[in-house]
Length: 109
Length: 176
Image (tube, rainbow over all chains, first blue to last red; front, side):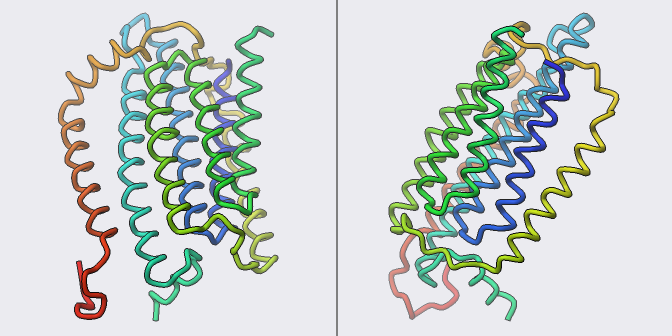
C-alpha cells in the first residue's frame, strides 16, 4: 500500500480529533479526541516503520524496529495520562457538579 | 485489487466514520462505543501491516483497559444523558473551518512529498512480531522500559491521591 494513503488517513483522524477538541465542551469527549489523535500518530509511526523496513532490510534486518517500540511507549504514556486525567475529571465533577470545560475559566480569576 | 487493499479501505472508512461519530454523538456512552470501534479498526490496520504485537497491545490496553475506565467514570458520574449546554453556533462553525484549514494545509504540504513512491510493506516482514520487538525492548530500551514502570507507579499514586474523597471537606482548603 502506498505510504501516502496512510499519511492521509492519519491526517484525517488527527484533524477529526482536533475539531472534536475545538467544538465539544464535554471534558470526557475532549479526552476521547486526544485518544483519537494519539492513535492517528501511532498508525503513522507503524506505517513509516514498515516503509523503512522495506527500504533498509537489505542493510539491516531489523530496520524499523524503533518505530514500533516508540508506539509501545506512546501507548504506555497514554494509559498513564488517561488515569490521571480521569481522576482530575472525577475531582472536578465532585467540586462543581459538571464536566463542562467552560466552567474551568474560573481558574483565571 | 487484492483482499489486502479491500480490507485497508474498509478499515479506513470504518475508522474515519467512527471518529466522526465520536465527535458528533450527543451521548458520551455512544462516543465511547464508537471509540472502541476506532481502536478495533486501527488494530486491524496494524494486523495488515504485520505488526501483530502492537495490534494485540492496542486491543488490550485501549479497548480493554482505557475504555473500561472511561465507561466506568461516565456511569459513576451518571453522565449518560444529554446535558451539554448548547454552545454558540458560530464557535462550532469556526472550529470546523479551522480544522478543515489545517487538514487542507497538511494535505497540500504532504501531497508531493518525496515519499510519494514509497510503499509500506504489508503482510510480510517480521519486525512487528513479538520476538523481534522483545529483543529490542529488553536489549536497547531497558532504561525507558524501567522508567515507564516508575511512571505508572507515579500515575497510580496520583490517581489515588486525586480521586480519594477528602475526609473533612472544609477543614483543609489546600489539601493534597
